[in-house]
Length: 114
Length: 113
Image (cartoon, each protein chain N blue to C red):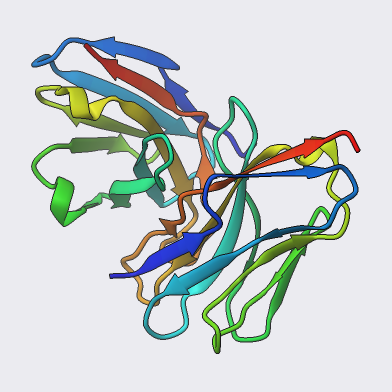
């Protein structure tokens, strides 16, 4: 079945560092790809999506590009801030009408003072 | 208002007893979902309603039931809780199905003792 694999566990980095969270997927056809962010005490919330090869999604300084060749949708941010402390989930929606999102296991981002 | 509400926030249950979790949304969304989230694991889809049609995942088919008495409300029912049901339960809704944006509630943390 469809699956999403992303950077496991947590990523600790200094504020203003460049952030990358890797996401790779396995699905047939052209699934839609998503990033969601979950802050403490809240449910996951939509960050952005991409639906076709080479399409870039972006929001709040985060971006990712759909790459069908490498089946990837890596999340990047040029300068991480303390307010970016959260869990980030990569997800896919398979082609087809009667479907729902499949999520990765989540990556916790921990910005530290430089 | 893009709010999905879940009640209660925390739920304690005894092994072998039933559990009923409630979710509501006021966005007139067609689809409502239930996901189970355990530590260090991906949120796992349990089931979803598209309008009045219930879709349940094959591997959790017999463990969870649900009802949607109207467009706004959806419940998740566990007939006999086991220790393995301890988890965060996330409800979500979307305007349609498939590649639609999901709006999540804050979750209900269920602890089974």
